[in-house]
Amino acid sequence: MTKADIVEKVASGTGLTKLETEAIIEGFLNTVIQSLREGKGIEIRGFGSYKTKKKNARYARNPRTGEKVFVPEHYVPVFKFSKDFKTAVDRGMKSMENN
Image 1: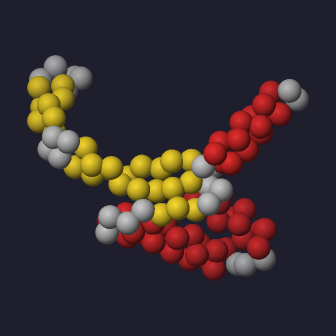
Image 2: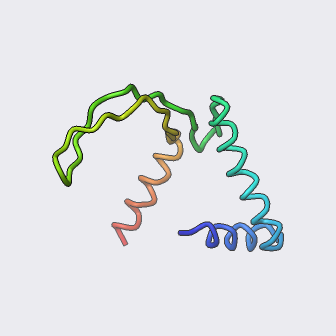
């Protein structure tokens, strides 16, 4: 599913235009990105939480050449699904298997 698919699905479910829905979804995504850039976490109950995780500097190996490469310290965004989210997906997938 792409962002355009999400916009279409949300627009049809809310009665908003696709243009309005796209602006809302863009606003949400930009807010998540900006919050993580500022080091703030986001928790959406029943869905999950976003935060940043610090990765220490290390040496890695280039899989193509086998050359040792230094990877500096950096931060990566992480998302942790809520228990309710995981349960809903599990039930949905199991019901699809049984059909």
